[in-house]
Length: 138
Figure (cartoon, rainbow, N blue to C red):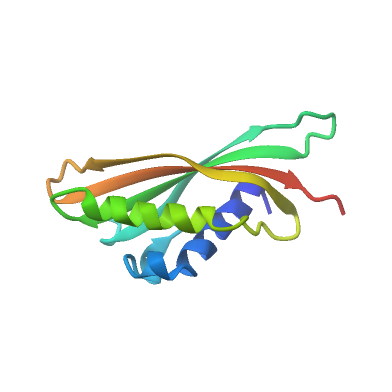
């Protein structure tokens, strides 16, 4: 399994296991796949970028930036901000479990923004989760 997939799985597992998140978004609407249109409300774990962070010849560290999209039907952006705050707290609550192949060295929500969707009925939040993962030697 790649580091970005391990992180994707870990983020979803953390979100669906956190009642503060599932009180706002049903677990069935926390998705790690494309859903067009996304159900409302929803959290969609989206794009990932992987950057080599190897500072040694072994090159065992990767920094992964995972984008999380939050959708809610509302005229304001209050609900989407509330969902993002719950998701951020869930992600920050403990080290992400990346399985046997990777160790989560460091993690954080590096950015979050909320905007009105052009449809005039929805709010859209975008968060970036920044994870430094290291391969575990066998």
